[in-house]
Every structure is written in C-alpha cells, then in structure tokens.
Image (cartoon, rainbow, N blue to C red):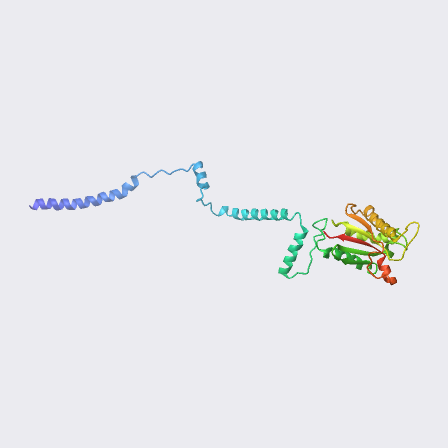
Length: 271
C-alpha cells in the first residue's frame, strides 16, 4: 500500500515536473526551432496595380497635383473668356456697362472701347459727342462748329465762312485744317456719313451757280470729295445732298440767322 502510494505520489510529482520541463523546453526550443515564414516579394506589375487602385494613397509627395489641376482649370476659364470677348458687340457692351454702373454707382459714366476695337459703333452718341466737343474746345471752334443730336444721329454744323468764301464752293486753306481734324474722328466710325449743303434765302444767279440749289450741292460735293480723296473716308459710306435754303436752322430775317443757315452739315447716321 505504502509502496503503491509512493509510486503514485512519485508519478504525480514526476508528471508535474515533467510537464513543467516539457513546457520550458517547448517555449525555449519550439519557438526558436520553428522556421520563419518566407517574405513575399511584390513584383513590379503588382505594385503598378496597387498604385492605380482608387484606394491607393501616395502620400504627401503627390499633393502638388491638386494645385496643378486648379491652375489648369483657371487657365482654361481665362482662355474661354478671352475667346468670348475677342469680338465685341458694342451694343451689348454698352448695356453691360450701364448695368454694372447701376450696381457699382457709376450710372452716368460711359466707358469707351476705343483701344479694343479699330471701328466704333456709335450706339452711344456720348462717345462721338465727347470727342467732337474736345476738338471744338481745343481749337476754339465754338462760334463756327455746332453739334446737334436728333433721330438721325449726330449732326456737325459747319458755318460756310469756315469752309468757303462768299458765293464760292471752293474750300479755303483754313477749311482743310478743320476738315482734317474732323476726319481723324470720322474715318474711325463704321457709320454712314451724309454731307449736306445749305444756303440762306438770298437768291444767287451766276454762270457757275444759277441757283442756291447748285451752290448747296457743289459745296456738299467738294466737302465730301476732300474727305474721301484726301482724308481716306470710305466712299461707300459717304453720300451728298443739297437742300438750298429749304432746311434753315435759324430765321433768315437777320444777318446772324442767315449766317447760321449758310452751312455744310456732316451727319453721322445712327445705326
């Protein structure tokens, strides 16, 4: 009995010790002796597929692409705007400027597009009248050149003493200077231009001019010829007409009124 118990006890103790020893041996040797898993090498094709994946994040080195894409988008927008405004419709341009003036408080300010377009539509008579008024003030033409705006357009009244001698239709030397300065403005306009001759009601009867009709037409003709042949106005845009004494702008009952009626009108026809 005693021996069997001892044997059992010994076995129990021995088993416990053996388990401990085997456990130690497993922990120390088993882990060390176990072969390591081989490292998997990623091939170039697999790396390319990973980088092309929408879930791949390349890190900080590619953040410049966002700025680059924004720049390209802005440049595209800029070129689209430049293309859109390369041919200006001045009517729409003036309406746009007027609308912007209402918003920003510059309602009465007229913006000229002289430098952006070689030919100016006179949809706003403010541009033409402004340039002509500058010319009149600069050269002190207040007593000899007058402006009028009406349904036809802008009319430049030039009194005959500026252009002609009494009873003559030949342009004087001084008139050439006046017409040259006016032509610098007129030839930049796409509008049709009508040159009109007028007289007072005092009859004329000479071998050259049997009536005021002849005189008024001859003065208009000579003025138009100078503007076309010397100053370069397009003949396709120029027409002439003579009204004799039948389109007065003042009374013929006074010398001053008759002087105002003896004139040549240059009419810039409204588009």
